[in-house]
Each structure stands twice: as C-alpha cells, then as structure tokens.
Image 1 (cartoon, helix red, strand yellow):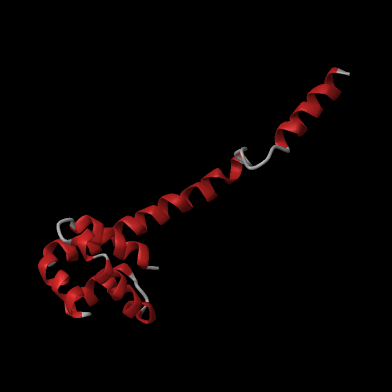
Image 2 (image 1 turned 45 degrees about the vertical axis):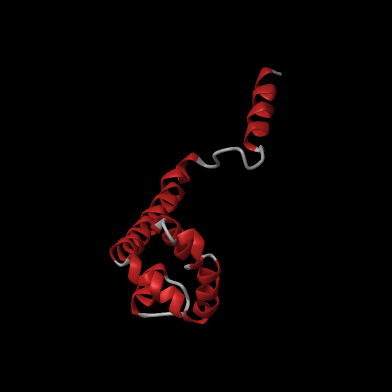
Length: 115
C-alpha cells in the first residue's frame, strides 16, 4: 500500500504541466540555449549601440533624409531585412521625437525591427 501511494505521488509529480523542470538530465543540453541566444543578442545589440552612439547626429540626419550610409550600417548590424527597410525608415521618421535626445531608444527600435 505504501509503495503504491509513493509511486502514485511520483507519477503525479512527473505529470505536472509546464511548471516542472522536465528531465533533469536534459537541463545542461537545453539550459545553454537561452544563454547562448542572449549572448548573441547582446553582442549584436552592442554593435548597434556602438554605431548609433558614435554616429548619432548623422544617423538622425539619415532618418530625416529617408536613408543614408550610417543608418544602413546600423540597420545591417541590427539585421533588419532589406525588404523591410523602407517601412522601418518611415516608422523611424514618424517616431523621430522619441529619438531626438535618447540614442538608447533608437538602438531599441532598431533591435526590435531586426531579425
């Protein structure tokens, strides 16, 4: 009776929804994916941030002009698809007030638009 109850409790614990950790042997295999993904994202964001902050006034002028080499470089670093860029430039122009004094907001927008 006691063994049956313990077995039943263990099965119930293993059958929980998405809240459980899953197979503990798989944690090392699956647990590294978010870390690697976050590291890649942070590296790309750092590159975009460096470009934007180093060329902030030029990029704002490129946005107002509808494009330019520094904006293209920032969009390349953010991995914004070429086919999306005309629409994204219009969005950047529409939200220019947000980027006038805060390069971080521009970096975030480019990263959101990127792939």
